[in-house]
Length: 392
Image (tube, rainbow, N blue to C red; front, side, top):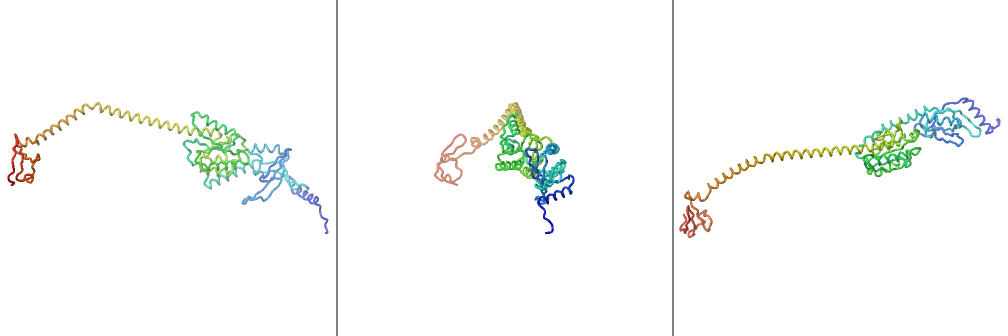
């Protein structure tokens, strides 16, 4: 060999010098935080990754360090500016110096961060998810569900330890109307990386007995604004948008609207406001029923008054109607008497007619009186008997 081989240290030393010469000053780099690990000494070790825009597979990685003196300033500054913590999953724009150590290899030392990039990236991602939901036709599905007239059976998704859950239940129980509600808790984490998975799992449990519930209420109550990013995922928004029951959100924030709020049937600011919404809904139906009851009572009373007036009027007219009716009947009776008198047998006999009977029955034909038959003949003033001698 003509050239002397390099030791590994010597090679790494040359690489270090080349990198120092190639990157004499700090530069800005974009990447996704795939790992964020704080140490007890106050340092923060990170891993940056770049993913393929189509496959989402990593195409580049680099380790980095935010030393304690920088991290103590960068962490609160980033949270204040963006509203989200410096954490895994974020896309960030970092100012770094490229370093190479003969023993530890290549890494990046972070010296600054640009929060506006992360804000813009988060907004871009959120906008992209909203556009996807709209494109898939699911954005308004939950909003289009009919809100129940009496939303008393309430499936609540919240943390069992959340103060907001207690406030929600207290508000329902102590409502001024004395309405009865039936809330049931389906526990799920309300902050951290498990929010999406936890809420979707709770929705699945509710869906197994969907006819047992009128509405779903997702409440958090309090908490830092920085925790809201966990409610801005596609899968969570998609599941809520297509859920078969109206979803009410009250996750305790006053300024920002999450994707979960955007797809829910109704979004309110706090758990207490969610309870008040349900109470108002039931109160509105109670008022409607009371109005209907009063209207029915009024209609019945009016009908009774009309019938009373009609009866009183008839009673007042009854003597006149009775006299007229009796006069009409008397006239009819007179006509009947005249007809009866005209058809009287005595009158007929007085006119010269007679009645012949055989065995008490009137003779109607010669066949009834063969020769030798004894007959009784009635004439005006009496009767006589005779024997039939001959039929002609």
